[in-house]
Length: 413
Ligand code: NIG
Ligand code: FE
Image (cartoon, rainbow, N blue to C red):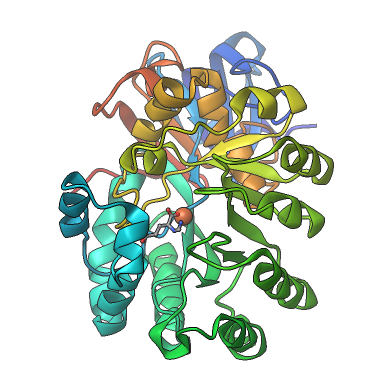
């Protein structure tokens, strides 16, 4: 039974709901509806007709026919970092490849140098406007990876800044330890020693400080091998931490199947994902996280196997991958559009990718859909149809956000 109507904190009326139920279909629309929030959770929802006559709330809002969705979830970002790499963008336009720039000491390593040199206050100041831009488009849950420090002090700084952003702003931050992002110069030609250092020292220390919610690696011919990745996964498992992986971005390393073997939350990128990788992910319930902005920015031509993932019923999440090298983007709405134009996903699949499936990619069962008992993270949009969110480019129809039941405007002040 729902709570007595008189106790509701917030009642939003005259709204259209896109509930995006995890096992649902379409947008799970409920038109001319109302939704009640109580103690930070959704307490009741239904059509205006079903609303009990005695319904009362401390604060009643008229949504004026706008659309309510779950707050958006960006489940893969490197948003905490210092510096920019537009010089590399220019180099690529003069013919250099991403791999060549990385091999010459640029790429991830140039951001590592900038991040190591930045103070923690500076790292926070540089990252804050990027997070605010995401929030201005309805994001209420955000994953943030380390991986531009690559030593204990700098990785800890990145993760502390990530936690601090979640304290300062109306957004839930999930942290991911990505120490295995690139090989730091101190360990040149000693990748196995570096993995040992991650497993024996960095991960235990950062985890003990409460800074790690999950563990990720860059399994790639310019990153770490499958065997090295597996050793890190074992260390994560020993601490009860979930794993995820940058997998099959530039080549097929069979990283997705490895992630599935460790019951991983997600395998991300996946342009080179094989049939056997898909089967392993399906069996393990590992989410496919697609990152169309990185695909776009690197001008990749090999598409992730969308039709095959769809046919196998693997949940597909979408994320910004916000990072200075391959996805300098802070718009999740634009990611929806890219998923449709570049990957031929439907607007409905795209919206699921940043709501119910994004939640699953973070292992969060308490959000991502509009259902009684879920967190009251909501976004109200001035749109005519849910597909408008993926259709428009560079236009932000967000009207209002509720984060844990509390109203916030999230405008770019
Ligand atoms: O997700 N693939 C590895 N990591 C990032 C890129 C990082 C960078 O170039 O700085 C990615 O695309
Ligand atoms: Fe990434």
